[in-house]
Amino acid sequence: MSRIAQKFAALKAEGRGALIPFLEAFDPDRDTAMAILRGMPGAGADLIEIGMPFTDPMADGPTVQKAGQRGLKAGASLAGTLGMVAEFREGDADTPVILMGYFNPILSYGVPRFCVDAAAAGVDGLIVVDVPPEEADEIAPDATANGLDLIRLVAPTTAEDRLPKVLSATTGFVYYVAITGITGTRSASTDDLAAAIPRVRKHTDLPIAIGFGVRTPKQAGEAARIGDAAVVASALLDGMLATLDAEGRATPATVPTVLDQVRELAEAVRRG
Image (tube, rainbow, N blue to C red):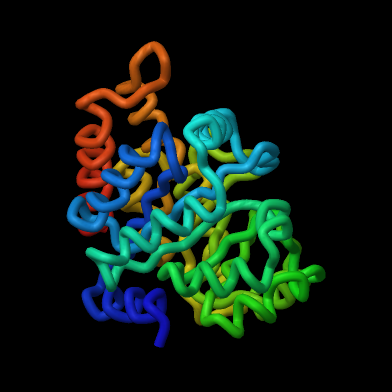
Protein backbone atom coordinates (compact mmCIF):
# COMPACT_ATOMS: atom_id res chain seq x y z
CA MET A 1 0.00 0.00 0.00
CA SER A 2 1.34 3.44 -0.95
CA ARG A 3 2.09 6.11 1.65
CA ILE A 4 -0.89 8.11 0.35
CA ALA A 5 -3.28 5.16 0.70
CA GLN A 6 -1.89 4.33 4.15
CA LYS A 7 -2.35 7.90 5.33
CA PHE A 8 -5.95 8.20 4.17
CA ALA A 9 -6.80 4.77 5.62
CA ALA A 10 -5.35 5.80 8.99
CA LEU A 11 -7.26 9.09 8.98
CA LYS A 12 -10.49 7.34 8.03
CA ALA A 13 -9.99 5.05 11.02
CA GLU A 14 -9.58 8.18 13.17
CA GLY A 15 -12.77 9.59 11.69
CA ARG A 16 -11.30 12.79 10.31
CA GLY A 17 -10.10 14.42 7.14
CA ALA A 18 -6.59 15.47 6.11
CA LEU A 19 -4.77 18.77 5.87
CA ILE A 20 -2.56 19.17 2.80
CA PRO A 21 -0.57 22.42 2.99
CA PHE A 22 1.37 23.70 -0.01
CA LEU A 23 4.78 25.25 -0.39
CA GLU A 24 6.68 26.28 -3.49
CA ALA A 25 10.12 24.76 -3.83
CA PHE A 26 12.95 27.24 -3.10
CA ASP A 27 10.50 29.98 -2.05
CA PRO A 28 11.87 32.43 -1.01
CA ASP A 29 15.14 30.44 -0.84
CA ARG A 30 16.08 26.80 -0.45
CA ASP A 31 17.00 26.91 3.24
CA THR A 32 13.77 28.67 4.24
CA ALA A 33 11.62 26.39 2.11
CA MET A 34 13.43 23.39 3.59
CA ALA A 35 12.80 24.61 7.14
CA ILE A 36 9.09 25.05 6.36
CA LEU A 37 8.92 21.62 4.73
CA ARG A 38 10.60 19.93 7.70
CA GLY A 39 8.32 21.72 10.15
CA MET A 40 5.01 21.02 8.44
CA PRO A 41 4.35 17.50 9.79
CA GLY A 42 4.95 18.62 13.36
CA ALA A 43 2.59 21.54 12.80
CA GLY A 44 -0.19 19.19 11.69
CA ALA A 45 0.28 18.51 7.98
CA ASP A 46 -1.04 15.07 7.04
CA LEU A 47 0.26 15.18 3.46
CA ILE A 48 2.38 17.88 1.81
CA GLU A 49 2.11 19.37 -1.66
CA ILE A 50 5.22 20.96 -3.17
CA GLY A 51 5.03 23.23 -6.19
CA MET A 52 7.59 22.76 -8.95
CA PRO A 53 8.38 26.33 -10.09
CA PHE A 54 7.67 27.00 -13.78
CA THR A 55 7.79 30.15 -15.88
CA ASP A 56 4.26 29.78 -17.31
CA PRO A 57 1.94 28.38 -14.61
CA MET A 58 -1.39 28.78 -16.41
CA ALA A 59 -3.66 27.51 -13.61
CA ASP A 60 -2.07 29.58 -10.88
CA GLY A 61 -3.21 32.95 -9.63
CA PRO A 62 -0.87 35.86 -8.85
CA THR A 63 0.11 34.56 -5.41
CA VAL A 64 1.37 31.18 -6.61
CA GLN A 65 2.88 32.73 -9.75
CA LYS A 66 4.96 35.11 -7.64
CA ALA A 67 6.01 32.27 -5.35
CA GLY A 68 7.22 30.37 -8.41
CA GLN A 69 9.11 33.42 -9.63
CA ARG A 70 10.81 33.78 -6.25
CA GLY A 71 11.69 30.10 -6.34
CA LEU A 72 13.16 30.33 -9.83
CA LYS A 73 15.14 33.42 -8.83
CA ALA A 74 16.53 31.45 -5.89
CA GLY A 75 17.72 28.72 -8.26
CA ALA A 76 14.87 26.22 -8.27
CA SER A 77 14.99 23.34 -10.73
CA LEU A 78 13.36 19.93 -10.92
CA ALA A 79 16.56 18.32 -9.69
CA GLY A 80 16.70 20.82 -6.84
CA THR A 81 13.08 20.13 -5.92
CA LEU A 82 13.73 16.40 -5.83
CA GLY A 83 16.77 17.13 -3.69
CA MET A 84 14.54 18.87 -1.17
CA VAL A 85 12.27 15.82 -1.00
CA ALA A 86 15.24 13.48 -0.56
CA GLU A 87 16.56 15.64 2.27
CA PHE A 88 13.11 15.73 3.89
CA ARG A 89 12.94 11.93 3.71
CA GLU A 90 16.12 11.66 5.81
CA GLY A 91 14.02 12.74 8.80
CA ASP A 92 10.49 11.71 7.79
CA ALA A 93 9.66 8.37 6.23
CA ASP A 94 5.90 8.58 6.68
CA THR A 95 4.39 11.88 5.46
CA PRO A 96 3.22 11.59 1.84
CA VAL A 97 4.68 14.17 -0.55
CA ILE A 98 2.96 15.21 -3.76
CA LEU A 99 4.61 17.33 -6.44
CA MET A 100 2.37 19.72 -8.36
CA GLY A 101 3.33 21.44 -11.56
CA TYR A 102 3.37 21.41 -15.34
CA PHE A 103 4.53 18.98 -17.99
CA ASN A 104 7.09 21.10 -19.83
CA PRO A 105 9.84 20.92 -17.17
CA ILE A 106 9.22 17.18 -16.76
CA LEU A 107 9.49 16.69 -20.52
CA SER A 108 12.72 18.68 -20.59
CA TYR A 109 14.10 16.61 -17.70
CA GLY A 110 13.08 13.41 -19.45
CA VAL A 111 9.88 11.68 -18.36
CA PRO A 112 11.33 8.21 -17.60
CA ARG A 113 14.30 9.68 -15.72
CA PHE A 114 12.09 12.10 -13.80
CA CYS A 115 9.77 9.34 -12.58
CA VAL A 116 12.71 7.15 -11.54
CA ASP A 117 14.39 10.05 -9.72
CA ALA A 118 11.15 11.25 -8.11
CA ALA A 119 10.45 7.80 -6.68
CA ALA A 120 14.04 7.47 -5.49
CA ALA A 121 13.79 10.85 -3.74
CA GLY A 122 10.66 9.76 -1.87
CA VAL A 123 7.90 11.42 -3.88
CA ASP A 124 4.54 9.66 -3.60
CA GLY A 125 2.31 11.38 -6.14
CA LEU A 126 2.24 13.80 -9.06
CA ILE A 127 -0.31 16.42 -10.07
CA VAL A 128 0.54 17.49 -13.61
CA VAL A 129 -1.97 20.23 -14.28
CA ASP A 130 -1.76 20.35 -18.06
CA VAL A 131 -1.80 16.62 -18.91
CA PRO A 132 -5.44 15.52 -19.44
CA PRO A 133 -6.43 11.84 -19.45
CA GLU A 134 -6.33 11.83 -23.27
CA GLU A 135 -2.59 12.51 -23.09
CA ALA A 136 -1.88 10.34 -20.06
CA ASP A 137 0.38 8.02 -22.04
CA GLU A 138 2.96 10.80 -21.96
CA ILE A 139 3.63 10.13 -18.27
CA ALA A 140 1.29 7.51 -16.77
CA PRO A 141 3.27 4.37 -17.74
CA ASP A 142 6.48 5.69 -16.18
CA ALA A 143 4.67 7.02 -13.11
CA THR A 144 2.92 3.68 -12.57
CA ALA A 145 6.10 1.69 -13.13
CA ASN A 146 7.77 3.67 -10.36
CA GLY A 147 4.91 3.54 -7.87
CA LEU A 148 3.91 7.19 -8.26
CA ASP A 149 0.24 8.06 -7.93
CA LEU A 150 -1.05 10.24 -10.76
CA ILE A 151 -3.61 12.56 -9.21
CA ARG A 152 -6.22 14.18 -11.46
CA LEU A 153 -8.04 17.47 -11.18
CA VAL A 154 -11.84 17.57 -11.30
CA ALA A 155 -13.59 20.94 -11.58
CA PRO A 156 -17.16 22.21 -11.17
CA THR A 157 -17.22 22.44 -14.97
CA THR A 158 -16.27 18.77 -15.50
CA ALA A 159 -19.21 17.23 -17.35
CA GLU A 160 -21.01 14.25 -15.82
CA ASP A 161 -20.19 12.00 -18.75
CA ARG A 162 -16.52 12.93 -18.53
CA LEU A 163 -16.11 12.15 -14.82
CA PRO A 164 -15.69 8.38 -15.27
CA LYS A 165 -12.91 8.90 -17.82
CA VAL A 166 -11.03 11.35 -15.61
CA LEU A 167 -11.48 9.34 -12.44
CA SER A 168 -10.62 5.97 -13.94
CA ALA A 169 -7.18 7.38 -14.75
CA THR A 170 -6.66 8.66 -11.20
CA THR A 171 -4.78 7.03 -8.34
CA GLY A 172 -3.98 8.19 -4.81
CA PHE A 173 -6.75 10.72 -4.43
CA VAL A 174 -8.92 13.05 -6.50
CA TYR A 175 -8.15 16.77 -6.41
CA TYR A 176 -11.43 18.68 -6.57
CA VAL A 177 -10.96 22.24 -7.82
CA ALA A 178 -13.54 24.08 -5.72
CA ILE A 179 -13.82 27.18 -7.91
CA THR A 180 -13.85 27.99 -11.60
CA GLY A 181 -10.77 30.02 -12.39
CA ILE A 182 -7.22 30.29 -11.11
CA THR A 183 -5.85 29.65 -7.65
CA GLY A 184 -6.14 32.12 -4.81
CA THR A 185 -8.69 34.45 -6.39
CA ARG A 186 -11.82 33.66 -4.38
CA SER A 187 -13.18 31.24 -1.82
CA ALA A 188 -15.21 28.08 -2.18
CA SER A 189 -18.85 27.97 -1.12
CA THR A 190 -19.78 25.31 1.44
CA ASP A 191 -23.17 24.84 -0.22
CA ASP A 192 -21.56 24.36 -3.62
CA LEU A 193 -19.13 21.80 -2.21
CA ALA A 194 -21.87 19.92 -0.40
CA ALA A 195 -23.71 19.60 -3.71
CA ALA A 196 -20.67 18.82 -5.85
CA ILE A 197 -18.72 16.23 -3.86
CA PRO A 198 -21.48 13.54 -3.89
CA ARG A 199 -21.52 13.87 -7.69
CA VAL A 200 -17.82 12.94 -7.76
CA ARG A 201 -18.18 10.17 -5.17
CA LYS A 202 -20.65 8.35 -7.41
CA HIS A 203 -17.76 7.56 -9.75
CA THR A 204 -14.85 6.79 -7.40
CA ASP A 205 -13.92 5.22 -4.08
CA LEU A 206 -10.76 7.36 -3.86
CA PRO A 207 -10.43 10.09 -1.23
CA ILE A 208 -11.35 13.57 -2.46
CA ALA A 209 -9.15 16.55 -1.59
CA ILE A 210 -10.62 20.02 -2.04
CA GLY A 211 -8.43 22.94 -3.08
CA PHE A 212 -8.31 26.15 -5.18
CA GLY A 213 -10.43 28.24 -2.82
CA VAL A 214 -9.71 27.01 0.71
CA ARG A 215 -8.09 29.82 2.65
CA THR A 216 -9.24 30.05 6.26
CA PRO A 217 -9.20 27.49 9.08
CA LYS A 218 -13.01 27.44 9.00
CA GLN A 219 -13.04 26.71 5.27
CA ALA A 220 -10.37 24.03 5.70
CA GLY A 221 -12.42 22.33 8.40
CA GLU A 222 -15.53 22.38 6.23
CA ALA A 223 -13.67 21.10 3.16
CA ALA A 224 -12.12 18.22 5.11
CA ARG A 225 -15.55 17.34 6.50
CA ILE A 226 -17.40 17.48 3.17
CA GLY A 227 -14.53 15.83 1.28
CA ASP A 228 -11.60 13.88 2.69
CA ALA A 229 -8.91 16.56 2.70
CA ALA A 230 -8.36 20.30 2.46
CA VAL A 231 -5.54 21.72 0.34
CA VAL A 232 -4.37 25.18 1.36
CA ALA A 233 -1.88 27.05 -0.81
CA SER A 234 -2.38 30.75 -1.52
CA ALA A 235 -3.27 31.65 2.08
CA LEU A 236 0.01 30.16 3.32
CA LEU A 237 1.98 31.91 0.58
CA ASP A 238 0.28 35.22 1.40
CA GLY A 239 1.15 34.73 5.06
CA MET A 240 4.77 34.08 4.17
CA LEU A 241 4.90 37.04 1.79
CA ALA A 242 3.88 39.38 4.60
CA THR A 243 7.04 38.40 6.50
CA LEU A 244 9.53 38.98 3.69
CA ASP A 245 11.72 42.08 3.61
CA ALA A 246 11.63 44.74 0.90
CA GLU A 247 13.93 42.63 -1.28
CA GLY A 248 11.72 39.55 -0.96
CA ARG A 249 14.09 37.79 1.41
CA ALA A 250 13.14 35.71 4.42
CA THR A 251 13.18 37.25 7.90
CA PRO A 252 13.26 35.54 11.32
CA ALA A 253 9.43 35.65 11.27
CA THR A 254 9.02 33.74 8.02
CA VAL A 255 9.22 30.10 9.08
CA PRO A 256 7.31 30.44 12.40
CA THR A 257 4.54 32.46 10.72
CA VAL A 258 3.88 29.79 8.10
CA LEU A 259 4.04 26.94 10.60
CA ASP A 260 1.68 28.77 12.97
CA GLN A 261 -0.80 29.06 10.08
CA VAL A 262 -0.47 25.33 9.43
CA ARG A 263 -1.20 24.65 13.11
CA GLU A 264 -4.36 26.76 13.00
CA LEU A 265 -5.52 24.99 9.85
CA ALA A 266 -4.73 21.57 11.31
CA GLU A 267 -6.69 22.30 14.48
CA ALA A 268 -9.72 23.29 12.40
CA VAL A 269 -9.44 20.18 10.23
CA ARG A 270 -9.25 17.96 13.29
CA ARG A 271 -12.40 19.59 14.68
CA GLY A 272 -14.15 19.03 11.33
